[in-house]
Length: 88
Image (tube, rainbow, N blue to C red; front, side, top):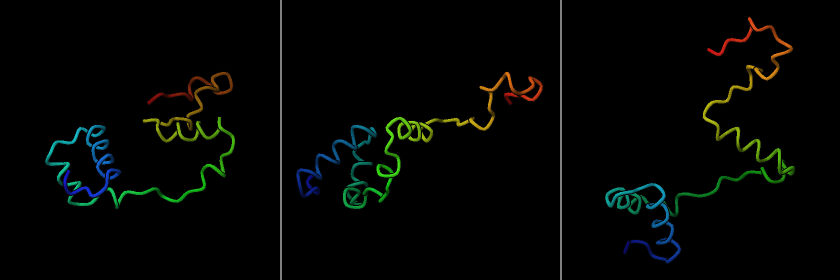
Protein backbone atom coordinates (compact mmCIF):
# COMPACT_ATOMS: atom_id res chain seq x y z
CA UNK A 1 0.00 0.00 0.00
CA UNK A 2 3.04 2.28 0.08
CA UNK A 3 2.65 2.75 -3.68
CA UNK A 4 -0.71 4.50 -3.17
CA UNK A 5 0.09 8.19 -2.90
CA UNK A 6 -3.07 9.68 -1.40
CA UNK A 7 -5.44 8.59 1.33
CA UNK A 8 -8.29 8.48 -1.20
CA UNK A 9 -6.28 6.11 -3.38
CA UNK A 10 -5.49 3.83 -0.43
CA UNK A 11 -9.13 3.72 0.61
CA UNK A 12 -10.08 2.83 -2.97
CA UNK A 13 -7.70 -0.14 -3.06
CA UNK A 14 -8.78 -1.32 0.40
CA UNK A 15 -12.45 -1.16 -0.57
CA UNK A 16 -11.86 -2.97 -3.87
CA UNK A 17 -9.72 -5.65 -2.19
CA UNK A 18 -12.43 -6.37 0.36
CA UNK A 19 -15.31 -6.36 -2.14
CA UNK A 20 -13.53 -8.49 -4.75
CA UNK A 21 -11.68 -10.80 -2.31
CA UNK A 22 -8.25 -9.96 -3.73
CA UNK A 23 -5.20 -11.70 -2.36
CA UNK A 24 -1.94 -9.81 -1.95
CA UNK A 25 -0.76 -10.82 -5.41
CA UNK A 26 -3.89 -9.51 -7.11
CA UNK A 27 -3.67 -6.30 -5.08
CA UNK A 28 -0.06 -5.90 -6.14
CA UNK A 29 -1.08 -6.31 -9.81
CA UNK A 30 -3.81 -3.69 -9.45
CA UNK A 31 -1.42 -1.26 -7.80
CA UNK A 32 1.12 -1.83 -10.54
CA UNK A 33 -1.46 -1.29 -13.29
CA UNK A 34 -2.65 1.89 -11.50
CA UNK A 35 -6.30 0.86 -11.45
CA UNK A 36 -7.28 3.92 -9.39
CA UNK A 37 -6.37 6.35 -12.16
CA UNK A 38 -7.54 4.17 -15.03
CA UNK A 39 -10.99 3.33 -13.71
CA UNK A 40 -13.54 6.04 -14.29
CA UNK A 41 -17.16 6.72 -15.02
CA UNK A 42 -18.38 6.55 -18.55
CA UNK A 43 -20.21 9.66 -19.69
CA UNK A 44 -23.95 9.10 -19.96
CA UNK A 45 -27.25 10.94 -19.86
CA UNK A 46 -29.24 8.28 -18.03
CA UNK A 47 -30.53 10.51 -15.23
CA UNK A 48 -31.71 13.22 -17.59
CA UNK A 49 -33.31 10.79 -20.03
CA UNK A 50 -35.02 8.54 -17.45
CA UNK A 51 -36.52 11.05 -15.02
CA UNK A 52 -39.29 8.69 -13.87
CA UNK A 53 -37.77 6.80 -10.93
CA UNK A 54 -39.87 3.68 -11.44
CA UNK A 55 -38.86 3.38 -15.10
CA UNK A 56 -35.21 4.01 -14.24
CA UNK A 57 -35.18 1.26 -11.61
CA UNK A 58 -36.90 -1.10 -14.03
CA UNK A 59 -34.31 -0.36 -16.73
CA UNK A 60 -31.45 -0.97 -14.32
CA UNK A 61 -33.10 -4.18 -13.15
CA UNK A 62 -33.33 -5.46 -16.72
CA UNK A 63 -29.57 -5.33 -17.06
CA UNK A 64 -29.06 -7.03 -13.70
CA UNK A 65 -31.33 -9.98 -14.54
CA UNK A 66 -29.44 -13.09 -15.53
CA UNK A 67 -32.15 -14.22 -17.92
CA UNK A 68 -34.32 -11.72 -19.75
CA UNK A 69 -37.26 -13.58 -21.26
CA UNK A 70 -39.71 -10.75 -21.88
CA UNK A 71 -39.94 -11.64 -25.56
CA UNK A 72 -41.80 -14.87 -24.74
CA UNK A 73 -44.92 -13.02 -23.47
CA UNK A 74 -45.84 -15.82 -21.09
CA UNK A 75 -47.86 -13.39 -18.97
CA UNK A 76 -50.46 -13.21 -21.77
CA UNK A 77 -51.62 -16.79 -21.25
CA UNK A 78 -55.27 -15.99 -21.98
CA UNK A 79 -54.42 -14.38 -25.32
CA UNK A 80 -52.14 -17.04 -26.78
CA UNK A 81 -52.81 -20.71 -27.34
CA UNK A 82 -51.18 -23.02 -24.82
CA UNK A 83 -49.65 -24.96 -27.72
CA UNK A 84 -47.64 -21.85 -28.67
CA UNK A 85 -46.05 -21.58 -25.23
CA UNK A 86 -42.91 -23.66 -24.92
CA UNK A 87 -40.61 -22.93 -21.99
CA UNK A 88 -37.61 -24.42 -23.78
